[in-house]
Length: 334
Image (cartoon, rainbow, N blue to C red):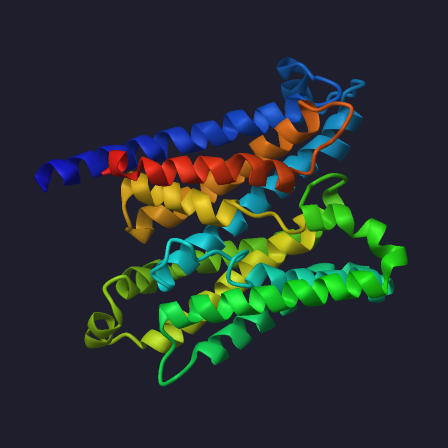
């Protein structure tokens, strides 16, 4: 047991050092590479000295906002997944699996296809869709309390229903589907300062609020009875954390579309490495999620040139087998 604690402490220290460095390296990689490569010294010159080189337009108008959006999207998805997995005591809990992302997706599709004149309200509509979906799931699972198993089962059913409704809207408005398909695949193509300004307030509020959920999330890990004995209002805290997860997932969905895998695997990998304690799990998941999305997006737009692969497709193709391998070797993490 002592050795396990020492190993876990060492892993946490290594993670705190390496993940931020990796995030910085990946961000610089995202700024430097694409259809046009920009030397690192040029990037430093532009960012630090307002250089007026030919690369400035590419960097400032295209790549920098895209990298920043990717960071926030990944951070929101990972934080949402980490909170849901803890509060439901289920490593398969994820905004994309239990229907929260699907609610945001349906609302966003309705806005884009049926109410294009209100497209400026896309982040708000996606959050409201995710929020309402989370409320419905919670109410359906409620029976003198909402157990984690009931929430997951209700979420899977709602996810299927919302997916069918989304497909129905697309069939009814098939002449407008072309504009929605890239969004459904999940991607950051064309994301600009405009999108960053839209999502940043919601993302920042949600991520800051998630830090205040660390203590109740840790207490809920003890079990409902133990948490109640410690004076916690279990059902209220569980509901608030689920709604916070909906805010985070809806914010990501509104800008990047239906990107999966991040909220499922990143928190799970961090948990296997450093343990369940949310004081470490949540912040490191936030950093890891941002790192993964920026890296995957850079690979998707630079390795398949002249085709730009939607990052959601790339994450699904790479992530699913990786997750299966990780589960197979889970014992190696201790």
